[in-house]
Image (cartoon, rainbow, N blue to C red):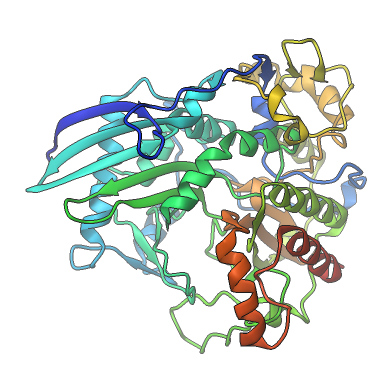
Length: 501
């Protein structure tokens, strides 16, 4: 698809009714060192992590693909064949699909911005301007003219790097140059939002309202800081934010996230849990149906979650994540749960070499710590760790710059294995599985679970305060999803605690 870009702009969010870009308010400046490698292992939880016994560790055959001499991932012939086969729950967005033009333009927009701004990528230091940065281009393609925008691109590139996604891997997945189609996710969701999957099923595009996207951009700093405090958080990892505008049509916004259910080939059941029961029943799927049914809280009442040695870790991390969202005045979020039966060979106890590899995956290769320029150490690499989370710091002390230490894998094992294990509990880590999606996978004795907190951009504003009374009338009870953040968080945590074995 040939493209000629007519206009390129690099600007920042503007105040409503103003033609001038917002300038950051003068704040006291200090530097926080963002431990990139602690963020790389994404799934953390309890301050008192249970001891992991060697005899209870499970192996996984879902290992990351090996890389060739050029550093690119090399997949098996079976993997490449499987990509061409029909997939349950999704529809390929081919030429005849009503959304084909939309996703084709999204693909072209991402590619065009990548070509025109090749210097945009992960940064060692993120400042206030990076959080509000917008890249915009106007594109003519096949007689179609549209505008395309990328929000906070350096921030999302830094997040991608921190969770071990290279820029080339991301670009080839979400905007491939070949003819591999996107997929539309077909489920029982009634949100009215569009869900598109990359061809390899690793990333999901989800359409969002303008106010939700603006809210997310406004809390990006908090989002990053939460991962500093909890490197293994179960919050979904957002890796991109885009908008597209066709002449005469409203602007459409998309957030790109890691798919919680990746890889999805063997997932047998999926649940969307909010911690309430009113209106939360889903009729199970008919046998042979190609629609993926996501079951809800009432369907889950007799179910049990068994994460083995990680039960306590899970509960404490869920509490940390939920309380973080409560502090942002957010509610109506869900825990997605996917469950698949483990094969016999996946239950075999791992040998020591595999355990060492998993430990290396779960800790930071280098400890440069997190320091403020005023000399107060949040973590100094010597075992001292403050009990206050970064999001609890007063706004007057928020940093203008977040500094990320350089990643040096060559010194990972000898220098940081002891240091990482020493602070394993304090950094709320767990032993990650060998998988492409390790941040959102927990292995129990009988099942592998895919878990992640999603849809946390709904604030308890006047709309929700009004809706809660309407739902009381509708359901004749108060056990519905529209509750104040404190009530929602407490109920959400308690519901999950009751279902963990």
